[in-house]
Length: 168
Image 1 (cartoon, rainbow, N blue to C red):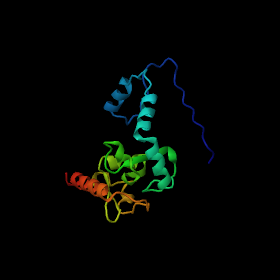
Image 2: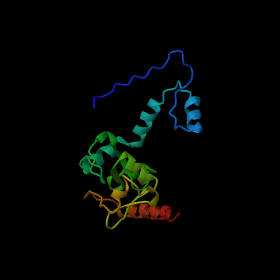
Image 3: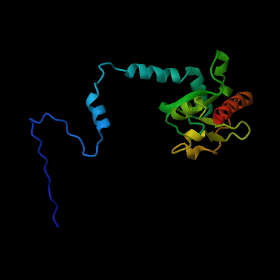
Image 4: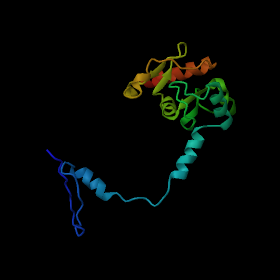
């Protein structure tokens, strides 16, 4: 059997939108009603990323003590590694390295939302039930991969926050 070449010809004068037959009316309406914005949000997004990374000295110190790797996954792409505070930042003293973790940006977000917790004694990672699906389910139960000294009091406080959020 030899291959068959198919050619689709759409008249240029056609003014109606082409949609897949199985596309429902709601998604068709959504596509037709989209109006692109003339604004450019890229600068705001980059500014938020810079703010998210926290104080430069704090991040630089954590990159040093974590050997440039995420404390959970070992990811070494510095562009996505962020300085996470164990006890949320409230004052300059909170930028102490023992109150910090170097985390991949998505894990930092989960940690801040109490969807990722760290057991203080064992340093085992725990994932909240609502986030326990791929790719995060596979992280549940693994150990934090750093020998860096972390504040036991900060870990305990954060763990209690995680447990409270898990009970909801």
